[in-house]
Length: 232
Length: 192
Image (cartoon, rainbow over all chains, first blue to last red):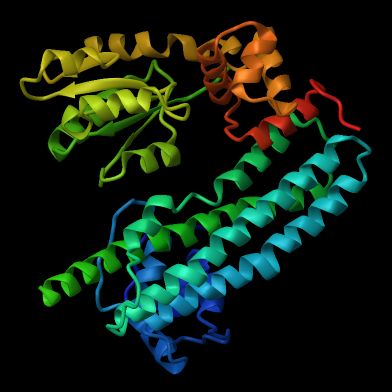
């Protein structure tokens, strides 16, 4: 299911996906279609105007469970930023509302006071995620675009972001733990479904964070220091 | 309770690290899960991710101030810190650690050190709340501040904070919102 190997451009795209189904999300965030046939990763990336190295870098972070930081100043930043923005959209517009709806249905059968509190908790969580993503889109991504184009207009730097960048998946994990460990609910297909969705979503959010923390931030720090020395 | 103690090893030398890993894995009489931490540039992130019960670490990664900060942080206070001593080290630094393992120990001695640290973990009471801790959870769920809780229960703010730390560790719930859910689910409080 989740084979931990490093992929290269000559591997088959279909191997990548069947060996680790979470890769399907990565494909869709690069706006790549299915129907991958027997194409290699490079062939399929080129066919869809996706930068192969950037794609591989992200795929390999997803496939590698370490904490290794990666500095790669050859990243194609428009691709990676579009990828991150698409992920935000996916969580905010699709995955989290879906979990919310499923929670409502799963809890409806149970008449207890806690259900409203769980939905409140989730509501609050949605607002926090929104705030977290909104900050990145308003402040961080525009800054990166300016930096890459050599036109940084303000005094922002990436360490301001990395210092306050919280682990947005933790509260979601906590909700799941509370339901599983402390809430004496009758299980149902609906409840299991929502829990499985939370597991997947939390993993996905963690990966999203890892791409920012392990790849984007260290790479931007490197570019910042280079542009500093250039100025001096 | 079949709880596997999670032991993390942070040591720059691959020979020493994997050596210790092998020794620990041979101690089959202890129920544990051992793993290596590499790329130690952000220890806190690693600890959040891997949640070790015992961290065996070369003190070059963990100076005195950082160790004391970790011990005072709710999230990391329950971790047992073991110094992996491979060179001469300042005795004051070593004293801050719960235990010391050095390279001259044999397997039996290492086992004894680890056993000492995990005695309390098997105890079921380490997962259930005391009556006092329940009072604190209720007060948190009512939205009281640490100061207000201290006044209400006639204890010091420091004691409240210690209780909160223990509660978080026992339940693995760290946010007030999560504690409210816990309180409701366990009928400690009622909501209208």
